[in-house]
Length: 148
Image 1 (cartoon, rainbow, N blue to C red):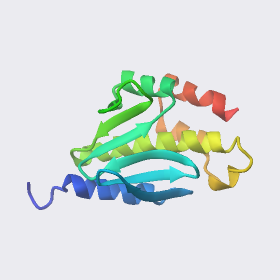
Image 2: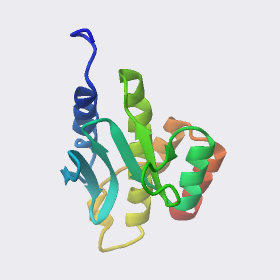
Image 3: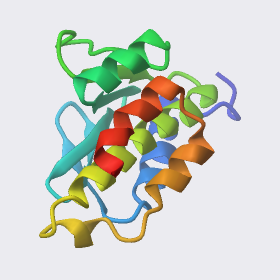
């Protein structure tokens, strides 16, 4: 590997640094050399130093993302809401960020429905960000019931 090609650990560090800047996100250690991203009481996802990104979605959204080839079944618990995305090269960073941001926006939308937690999420424009992300109609549909 040339010195200009980032290692998986460097890619994971870059992703972690990006997610840490999102409003309300807390970053904490996670098992197996990981970093966990939480928003209030919710885990948005976690990433392991060796390049595995795990995200739990509502089952219908998870199934859609897998059907569309954006992520895969979880490597340990495939029959769950969890997904696994592998970060191998710099080209994987944007799709990884997209998947995490989708999870983040879903949690922002659901936490806003609970008055005691609404302050955790700040002024994130969920609908505007979703539009900018250009999700498929099936992915967008998963948000319809939490955005009304």
